[in-house]
Length: 307
Ligand code: CP
Image 1 (cartoon, rainbow, N blue to C red):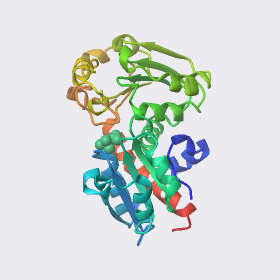
Image 2: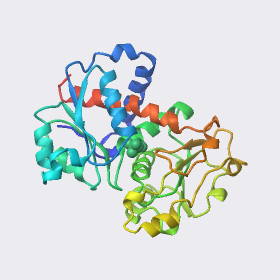
Image 3: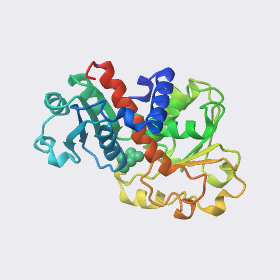
Image 4: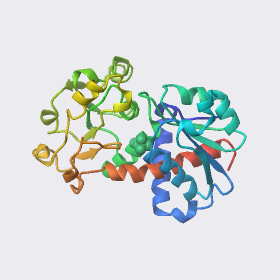
């Protein structure tokens, strides 16, 4: 049974196929409105979410299917001590596909080994978030019509930022990528990601703490939130949370076609004054996430022989 736990579980050809399916859904939504009729998606969210859970649910409804699930661990039998494996074995009796978010890195992988239906990782701790990357990739493709020859700036919490780790993995497979890593020292990209993704693929990268100096010349600036929920110490969070705030004055001298991206939720990282800038792409990412999740649900259910 095929599950998607890591963005590298999809080949570049499959990512292209998902992008083209998503574009076809955007152009011809009625053609997809009954494809999952009678099928059920289970959303198992052990950690809070607005976009990922609701876009998975909207995706399944727009495919004609139904949704069951829970939005917090405390409303499931996890609160009584049930294991992830037993939970997904149970849910496999009721649903056709699972989207799971969990605070523990690796939990969706464990789930995929126990489930008898496909499992999609909807974010595991500070590790990976492959369907956010699918949303990001469709957004990049719709602006640039290619994933090659891009200078990508990643800013904020690069240590715990699962969206950053998944996006770097995905982008590392395309030619001509250059990366600028912008973070405070405490929130630098983990060395395992630098080694396994950047160094292994000979991707040129620089590390800096200075956002303003890094901005000119970037094709994409991908801002991220400093995540309070990943800190053991509130003082450290409060010290670091507003390190980077993108404001209109900092955009002077940047490219006219700069893509300003953020997986959201945003706290203070991007001033709301930027929201009306035509280069702001973050609400496009939100919408594109629904289309890519529709494409992914269909692909996995087709491969499983369910539809
Ligand atoms: N981007 C993202 O994962 O948002 P949520 O936490 O609201 O799902």
